[in-house]
Image 1 (tube, helix red, strand yellow):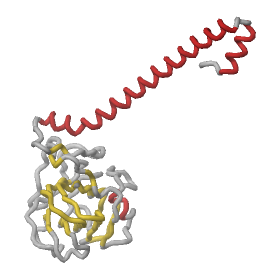
Image 2: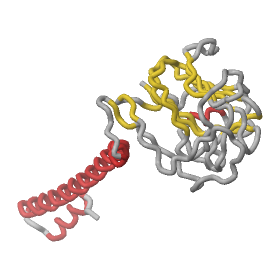
Image 3: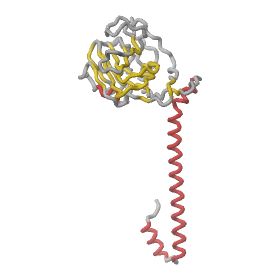
Length: 267
């Protein structure tokens, strides 16, 4: 440990160095301390810069490893996925029509205009079930995507909806959401809409796998899918809007509805 200034003066006094020699000795010792301190700080800065650069390059690296080159002016969506909770093809899902087959490998990168970010993080959220069975609606935009107990919201049975207010209009390029990925489940009547009207009298439907109009939002043609830690990624093609609404109508295990997180990428 480096001696304090008081200790320096005591040592110098006890050894009775001449003033000139004591000054030179103290200066040399101080310079050595300063150089050592600067060297350590420089090393710390290098480490921080390295981690920062690795963080910036993570999305680009994933894209490069996939062998897919980003189009001009585009970049891979900077996704941070939660920990997988199960591995392999689920065996307990039967009788679900138009069920999408698992990809069997990581999802390829999704490219969007440079500068997009998650607009939903921390935004106000409302829903048809204002008093969930478990959790609070604000958890759906809190950034926690893990499937651990206490990280998801459980809504009532049958058709339910949640609505996110982005506070102003944005160009929206992608939506990513997780209902519940602790177990392999299929959620029914998944409908996603974007609007500038809080009442949704006019809206654009960007996803709909309600094949029999159970949610009364029109008959959809999109696939059912198995929930995984990758979430469901939807290409919204730059649709413009302020409000994002998601419907669901239970799942293959129960009539209840769940949400872990919803991300809305735009600018």
